[in-house]
Image (cartoon, rainbow, N blue to C red; front, side, top):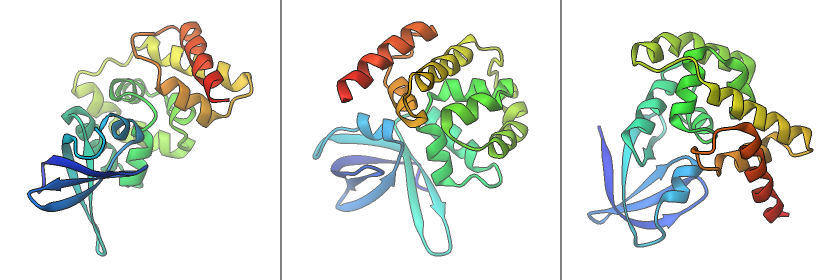
Length: 193
């Protein structure tokens, strides 16, 4: 119904952004990563959106590119995954990484990296594995193992799953090997303390 919104940022919170479009303010929920990339107040932004309709509310969910929106809509069509759950899953890893994890059937990656439970991860894989394969997503991915190894290493060093996931999420995707990702994550975590 509402395919995208384009306008000026009026407010940016932890979970949503208010975008002024032609004198109307739209509250658009998004991932923390997307919200970091959105300009500050009065900056211009274009978000691809999904309108979620419930009996008691209409909610907009927005993303900076269409690939993110597409994955979000795919995730929320899995029974038991609502829009908040979809955002939670997408907040942790890049779209391509999530698609590869689903295509390869790697439920352990989904549970370790996104923080969802085993049953939910199995349901996502069961429902979407064939769909990812039909879209040409390659199921064999050394990046998944490297990311999982880096997460395990940070947890073994005493960081929480959440701290480790957030630090790894800030590292550029060009850095692929676990050792380098752990080193960069430790630098970021060291600055926070």
